[in-house]
Image (cartoon, rainbow, N blue to C red; front, side):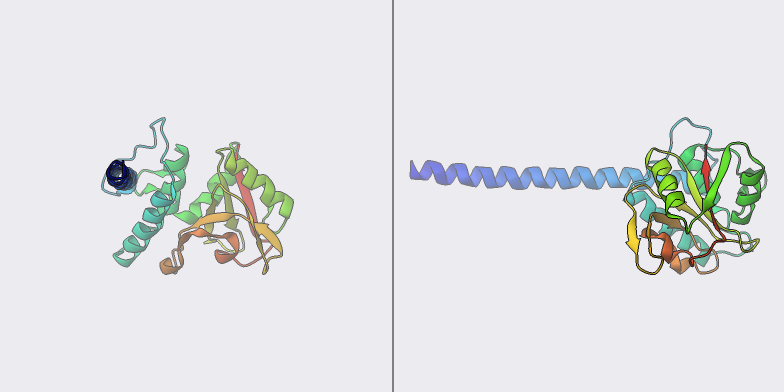
Length: 214
């Protein structure tokens, strides 16, 4: 009987290790598939698939790839407009949009996003990002699958960030609960991120306007 228990325990350990290995392998394969999917969609040399009815699976793995790929793109940039349309492409691929497409560049550069939004009936300005009610509304919209952007309107080339789904966290510097954002920083690409709040992307200001797509 004692030998039976030892044998059973050994087999259980082996099976447990095997299942864990299979699980980790499947998870690794899944992450590889996600990265490959994102690579295909964000490869500037490949045709856009934004007319598809599917949207990109924006897991943390995908977001991490997007940020790293953007920084790599900027490091190799030759022309002035290289990589400056990346946030437009991300937004478009994520939400299956066509309004930010450009015949020459593929997608418009980031500073063209605001003029397009303000001319469109599909978008709505809901207020400034220093208003907690506005931020809560935008995050609720995002968590339901909608698209919400914060744009620095103080300058023509104002930074554009996309809200990410999740919970807002209290920011001591802003005195508000802030959502996480995807921030691809053209003038300092090394400061790009996907896992921090709005306060890391922009300074608190009434010029930060929040737009949601209806």
